[in-house]
Structure formats: C-alpha cells, structure tokens
Image 1 (tube, chains in turn blue, green):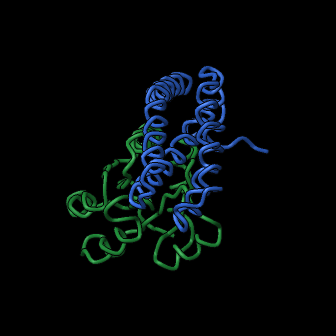
Image 2 (cartoon, one colour; image 1 turned 30 degrees about the horizontal axis):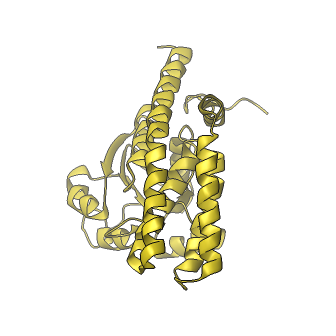
Length: 136
Length: 129
C-alpha cells in the first residue's frame, strides 16, 4: 500500500473519530450545565467534585479533537472551580463560572464543524511516523 | 535508554473519547500492540497477562488515580520496573520533575496531537535515563 493511500485511510479514520466526538459534544456540555445547576441549588462539595471531573475530561478531549475555543473556555472554568472548591459559596467565583458556562454554550453553538475539522486535520498533519523528516 | 524494542503499550485512561483516539494513534499510526484499560483496577488485573513494555497512565481518574495506580503496579512482580509515562490535562512544567522523581519516565500533556503521539512516546522510550 502506498503512502498516499495509507494517509487517506488515516485521514478517513480521523474524520470519523472527529464526527463521533462532535456528535457527543452537546451531551457533554448539557451534563456539565445540569451538574452546575445542581451545585448552585445545593452548594454540595461532592457535586462540585463530580463536576470538576466532567470539566477536566472535556478540557482534555476538546483540545485533542481540535475544538480550541471550547478548550480555552473550559480551561478557564476548571481554574475557577479549583478556587471555588476552597470556598463553595463564593458569589463572585460562581458568577464567573456562570458567565463562562454561557460562553461555552455560545462557543459550541457557533462552532463551524467543517472549519474545525479542517483545522484538526491540518494540525494533526497526517503523515506516517516512518517517513523521514525532510532536511531543513 | 531502553535497549529493547517498544512493542506493547498499556494505556490506562477513564475517558472513552481519549481512549478511542489513543487506540487509533498507537495501533494504526504507531503499529504498536495496545491494551486499553478503563481504570487503575483494570490495569492491575491485566498487567500480568499483557506484560507491557511501557505503561501510559492518565493522572486524574476516579478510583485509583495515576500516581496510586503506579504505586500499586510497582508492587507487582511483572510491572515493578516497567517504564511509566503519565498523561495529564493539568500539569505545570515544574510538576513534571516531581512526577519523574516519583518514578515516571515522562509526562505527556493533554491535549495531544493524535498523529504524533506514537512518535512522542517512541522518543520518550529512546531517551537516555
């Protein structure tokens, strides 16, 4: 099999993975919002810890799949949550998170999937690891 | 530097989307034999049978986290000296040295590039220890 064919096949698989992830992304954001609303009602530490895990996971995956704007917002939310865990009822931090969650939803609604996919493929730069580096 | 060839990699990662793309990266691009575990407990159950050359551990997992999993693996005969690389979405440069002091070979940060991940692991494998 030639390199071009192999790379086409890798690109197809990457596209498939991207589409599967993007289909599930709304559900992940919904879950984060629902858990946040639950926390706002209860100010329960365990709910916040559960939320932190969801936020942390979304941070790692969104960046890996090329959703850079979502990654940047969720990174900010995670940092705020690290502060909030030390003072659960801090109104200013909670307002900040509320705003950032709103931005997260907006960023998701505004995502242009084709552009994001193309950027993802470009960044990933499909290339066999066995190909030698070009002389610089 | 490791003298043997890197062939078998065990991945321990709780998040499905990350597991999927790592499997693609290491099996399809890197051509490694890969065993994926969803938790530290599963890694402990599978390590003897799979006998990996290298173990990649997510840092933040429910149940046993990355460090706890590494400590538990170190108590097994099969993985007492198997090189371990941490995968983390939250690591500061100064923390990398702390993880190395704990016994990790290196730390790879998330997000990662799925196409170059296998190359990155190979480079870590070949680096002088």
